[in-house]
Every structure is written in structure tokens, then in C-alpha cells.
Image 1 (cartoon, one colour):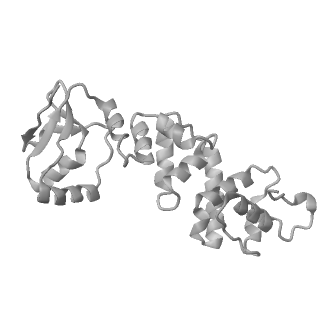
Image 2 (cartoon, helix red, strand yellow):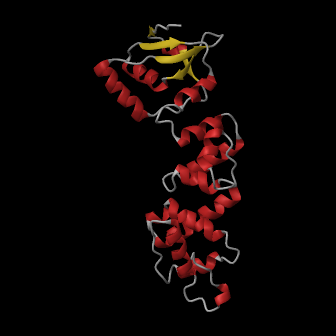
Length: 242
């Protein structure tokens, strides 16, 4: 079937699915400049509801750009599309991010994703989205695959323990490289050691410099080196990776 686009100045005809990605001022502003120079090159894609409302499957930023300029919006209606088409279409685009997937499942009411999104917002600007996904994942393996497939399971207790220790150490050394994934993975491994006592580590990083390296193994061994500093009893010391 061949589709022909229509145009309208009536922006109120359109509405967003809850699964649509969030619009951004930066993207809209870029489109405004593009529309000024070249016009709207690509129509928005919609599905028509029984009440006549046109639900946007793809192109919500384009709608806002046209509205900002006061120019007509070009659109195509395909009633074979629905809210599930939003993810299918957008996920084929390069800019469909990990955070988009998380928001997608969160708005569907998946509790693990709602909790994950809350943690991402809590630590925005401190830890990356992928890092938060990893430390709060109940297994810590196959993380982003689980995120995209809708099967992500969160472990709040585990993740909070890792994050809190990272922040305590960071407050002492104030080295932003410490917040990178290779060090956080080393911290995660350290916490699995049943003999680990965070009070000893926090005390010793005030006495001995904690260096940050480029690999997880080197960072783990560095943490062990600092942890063992001045410990008298061999039985209390932790082992490095061979």
C-alpha cells in the first residue's frame, strides 16, 4: 500500500503514546533550524484512535518543532501501527539508548525498571546509566541484554552496598577516575570477600594513597594492597589476584 502525507496547522489533533521517548529541547531546537532552512523533510508517523486522535508513533520532536515555528505539520496515518510499534521503530535507530529502553519498560509498569530508573535519577551525573544497571543487577552478567529484553531484575541491597562504599571512598580520594566501571567492578569483587571489613579500607586510604588503574584486576589488587597496609595479622589480610 502506498501512503501519501497530509498537512495540518491543527497541532491538537496529535497526542503521544506513553511509550514515546521523551522530547528534548536540544533536539527540537536543531529541528527548528533545519525546518527553517529545508522545511520538514520527513513526515511524522501516526496511528488513528477510534476517537479520531492521531497518536504519534515516530516524530514527536518534529511536531514540537513545527509548532514552535507555526508551520504546518506533515504526517502519515497507518492504522496497522500501535503503541508496540514505538519501540520496534525507534529501537532500529542508532540513538535509541539504554535509558530509552529502561523508560520504555518503566512506563509499562514493570516494577524492576521503575526502581532502576529511580536509582539512575538519584545518581545522575555521578555514575553512568550502564554502571547503575550493572551494580543493581541481581546477577551482574548479561546486564544490557536483560535490560533490552525486559527481563532485568534489580537487587537493591546489593547495589546500594556497592554504591555507598564507592561514594565513601570517593569522598576521601576525590579522584573522578575512581567512579569508572573498572574500579566499581573491583569494589564489587572486594565486597564478595567474606573477610572484608570496609572500616579497615576506609581507615587505610587515609594513610596510604589509593591509585586508580585502567583494568579491573589492577584496581582490585590496588584495593587489596591498601587494605592490607599496616595489618599485623596475616589471617586478617586479603589476597591479591595471582
